[in-house]
Amino acid sequence: MLHYQPQISLKDGHVVGFESLVRWRHPELGGLAPDQFIALAEDSGLILPLGEWVLRTACRQVTQWYSEGKNPGRVAVNISACQLGDYSLLDVVRTVLRETGCRPEWLELELTESSIMTRTQQAVSVMSKLRELGVQLAIDDFGTGYSSLAYLRQLPIAKLKIDSSFIRDVSENEDDAAIVRAVIALGKTLNLQVIAEGVETCEQEDLLRAEGCDVVQGYYYSRALPAAEAGEFLRQEQHHSTKAVTSEPESLS
Ligand code: C2E
Ligand code: CA
Ligand code: CA
Image 1 (cartoon, rainbow, N blue to C red):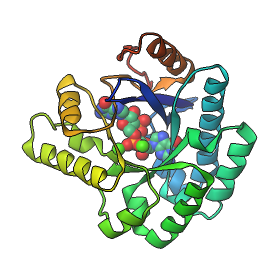
Image 2: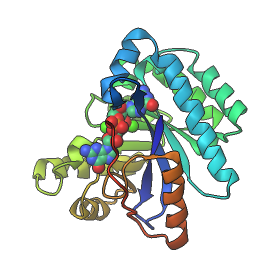
Image 3: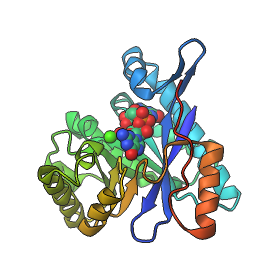
């Protein structure tokens, strides 16, 4: 199954996108979180068909929302290192966009910092071609890898996503706050949008807003929701443009 977690602009509180997050409803084991099967899918090579299914499902969903007159912004899809290392990624993206009717500007791909930096040359060339298609790129888990700042400047990316490990204690821990401040400043300097993930409290939001972070995502606003509930979240938000429609905690088992 694919769930969708809203991303909210700190400027006006509007939903500007959704991150798609995969779940596995296993017949015997019940609901499984991605941490329990993504690594296995990568080792077995199944990540390629799974990743394609995720991409197709997300593109179909965002296209459906637009056709219903909703404004979901962009749908973000996580791309694993194996997919980025596979030259067919470009063809897959092109085909899926064509088949689903999804416009390139409705799609964002999240590439982790480590998957880009371990094979920079190839990553840069694939990323440039994706960008030429009109698809937006974001660096995920930013701050957990070892970014070459020289490469960062060259990469055709639009967004930095600050890893949730820095957000968790940002209100109490001066070191984390300093890192978050520095990443936001780096993003501004390089003309990139900055999004913080794992935002759970009002204090975290206040700090991120004060530092100039653009977009936030986390349980404070909503869990990742099944498509129907995500559509409902959007409908309510676009009716009174307020945040935080609380839903039942996502149950995985
Ligand atoms: P990620 O890309 O860093 O995704 C963010 C994770 O943080 C998600 O976990 C999300 O549910 C969780 N999260 C969101 N808000 C909060 C919050 O406020 N607090 C806390 N503590 N957590 C929050 P999830 O869905 O379990 O996904 C885990 C990881 O699995 C993702 O990390 C991503 O790396 C991977 N993943 C998920 N879906 C896909 C996919 O379709 N393809 C690939 N290749 N990887 C995926
Ligand atoms: Ca992600
Ligand atoms: Ca992360």
